[in-house]
Length: 506
Image 1: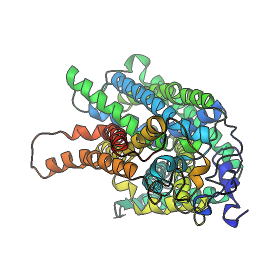
Image 2: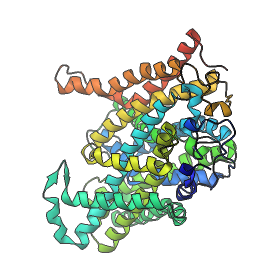
Image 3: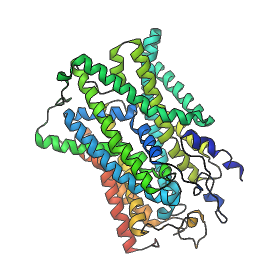
Image 4: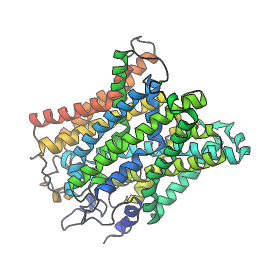
């Protein structure tokens, strides 16, 4: 077996995945193949494993902050709850769509894209998705570092002086906390010990325990009669305005989960059956998210009578309790949970995506470390620090991801009619089914460009026109739907291009 594929099992175990190398069959071109990318010999994930994946993904500070930021839109608590639930049901439907091709073939997201984009063209969506994972890796590490800072300030008050000076938007204490978590996560990724599997298994439930304790504590302080489900932050909205705002909030929920939703094939490939994957998605998304959303709304609502203001960040809520035990327990739990989601969602994706670009040179470890280093260079603390920035960021990420999703779904379900020649995914032969033109499918590439440009412009142009005072009409709400714009246009563009000049064999 080639040397570059000597260590995939460590990271597979680290992510809580079943150990099992891909099967490199005779004739597979090494320029497209390593054990991480080849079809799995054994698929053994149960519904619980899929559920556990989503638990790690949902129960993070990022998820809580994003849910809490919906209050800033002017929505009441009950409206936030409805928006969260409708949004997650949409995520479930689309996740099932993207899960099937990888579960059936046993290959990860970047490899299944070869059937649509071409064996070389698949590097386009792989690189885009990998770069997005880098961005989210940085965001989650930054959010976890805020919990660590609170612990520092509580137990070592002298460190407060390190918060006075800033460089590139972050204080010295912020850099220290970020660096500690960065090194810890990098060590976890690199070693890939079996204990990490157990770590992820309890990280999600641990957040539930802390959030339940936090909710019970706040409700007991406030009194249940003082928990208001009509609370909101910002201007009170009328019926028509609240309806359109709820639609925007639903779209933002979809945008938040659009990353793991797009590359969910990296995980569904391990499912022992598509039915098992769908059951896991049902439990992990609407059912799990319902409870998480209720806790989020109740906890946020209880902060008003207890602290005199609406607090939508769990880290700040724990900080306001101001007891050593609460800060230590809450801070460490949120740190652990966020490290867990980074392992699951933001390491596995770039590991596969960047490995797909050059299987012989880039292993899982290398792909993950590319994400870790890139996350620092993006300085996530400068663009994910307030509700407006969160919404703007989600809009831009949705604009990048939506077209890739639309093209993949159209290519697999309508053009290929759910038929994939797995062996051809690893062939560089000009006569190969997925060679198209020099390894690229021009229709898929053009569909991505034709849908991606309008989606990105829908985020950038309205805000730019307002900032430059070229218009007084505020249509920045369009950016909330960037994922849907990109997805819909990508879907239609590929269908029209294939109808005009067919390149994909059904």
